[in-house]
Image 1 (cartoon, rainbow, N blue to C red):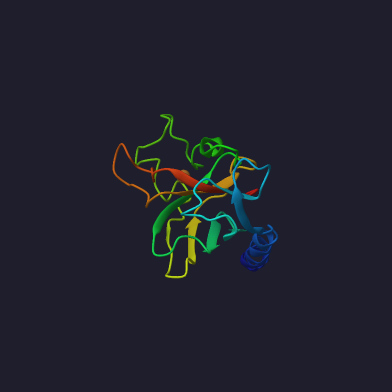
Image 2: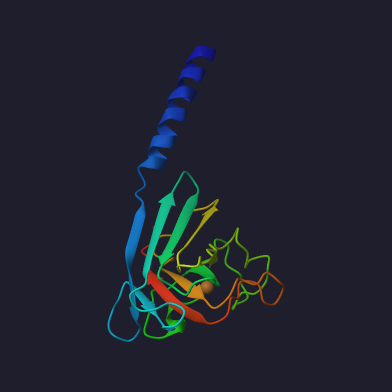
Length: 183
Ligand SMILES: [Cu+2]
């Protein structure tokens, strides 16, 4: 009996990583376009910080109960720190269209500025600092998966994300937005 149990355990250990690997990556790549000119993959509301024609890629890599999100930028304002997060709604013609941050455990108090909910373990924060050529890369891994259809965009903000009570999760004006169909 002990032998049978260990064989089953070994079989399950092989099956679960394969199930995790079957979840597809979500990849989005494109150029920022000025908002208001129709439906774009990526829109900018601030041509100085995020010029039209600058490039962005977002990759979501689901794991077994985890999610890794990578953000890459090229051709944006050099030597500057930006905030960036996963938001709940698609990009629109106004910065507010992308809705609040996606939260694994939703804060009953909205807008959420309580560090117990607005933190990088419960949200996906992708703050980045550009190099002298306007390139940047950031990534975040969280210990949960998105609820299907509830995470729809990555928003780039004016400055690094605040962590203090009453301001947690805020990062200033919304400068640009990328539509991503997170799964
Ligand atoms: Cu945000």
